[in-house]
Image (cartoon, rainbow, N blue to C red; front, top):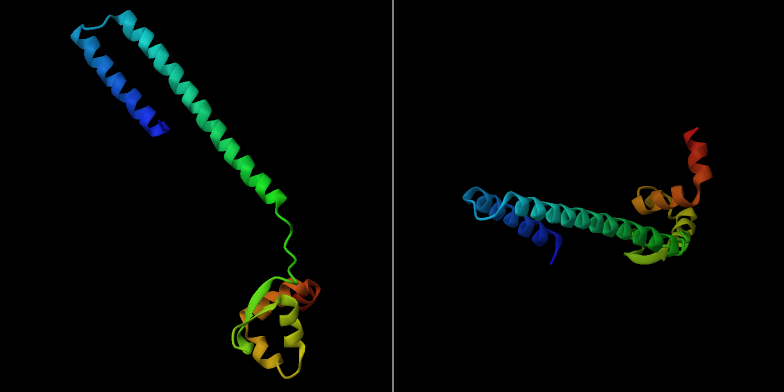
Length: 128
């Protein structure tokens, strides 16, 4: 049973208990005892839910800490000047440094991002 099914079941049980109590089918003591049990189940369900949320967050953090760092120089991108050829960011930077390619590469978003990523000191110097 999932959490929603349990919550619906408890809600239906409370409605039935209230109806039975008003009709005199159960005593106040029995209703009080049932409410105590339902409150305990509700607390347990909330504790389980909080535990599952924490477990999920920890799994995500662990997975992120175990992933190897990305080497941006060998990260692969598409070169539009070379008919969509897949190249590394380092190759992109080298290709754009050739005087014959400078003009066409200047407008390329991949090149701009690669330049900012691999040459942060150049970007900072230009911004100053």
